Length: 393
Image (cartoon, one colour):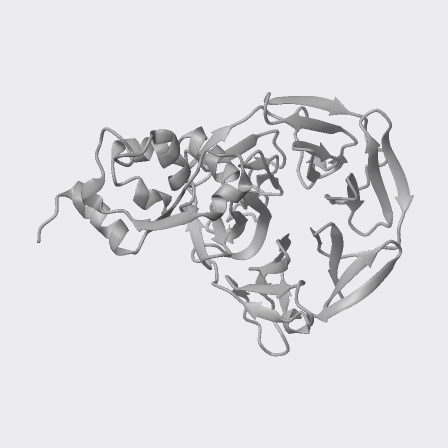
């Protein structure tokens, strides 16, 4: 049986067993109404161009489409122009939140290939490749990445390109650029630039707003400046300066409802007490190493163990000795899990080979005895992780 291109697209989608849950009272605010549902398989012959799903108001159809996993969206768009518009609409992404169908993704960029990002879907154990970041800066590095308001944000950084003849850095060290990726349009777009160009700086999200602090404007000049960005208004505003701008890279974490700025190799941690009060410096004997926050708890990887940091003390969670050759990896929390992503296997003993890794290892902190497991490796990215965060769509 021959299909037209449109019908073939519909046929392929529904041959994969795509089911939509139609709830008896989709528009009701009564949560008990959502417990009664009818599973139906949509026949492609019932779809028409004049409406999303024949016999249903478009508002109800949108709520049906909102239940479809994000990785299937490109195929859904092949059904018709109206479905494409619906899938890319703000209403559909709002409906995903309303029907509790939002999904959490891991976002990763690595040394190879340059300026490319991938999303990991933990529910379906698969990777989604995003369009190339359209920055004019090649070999983008030393940037920060966060997500808020359902979008991915890439901030600052510069070029890591090297002149092949001299070995010197061949590009901009720090920029004020800000880019955002919108999952609804599946496209990158520029946002308002930061007030100060910076690289290797602290960057966090607090109450939906992005806070950046410290870093370097060039290899020899560190900065005290801090600023805050509102994604709704696309405006940056200055915050009180840091008390100290050390000659080392800094990073930021949020827990206990406060932003903490840490400088590599130093025990001094600067905490943003409030926007008016500014930063307060504290001396903490925290373990140095990659860290992440899971369920409001701070976890650190050091001495090839995963520790939970509780005040001045720490609790050993599990060994990570199997990663002793691994450098340049990303450590990130998602849900109840800690992910170790990518990196490089360095030389050992007489073996001088360096291997760029696409491996992904996961530790489930919700289990009684946490153990490491492997999940699907990155399909495009490999090597040193340049940026890693999570995104809720």
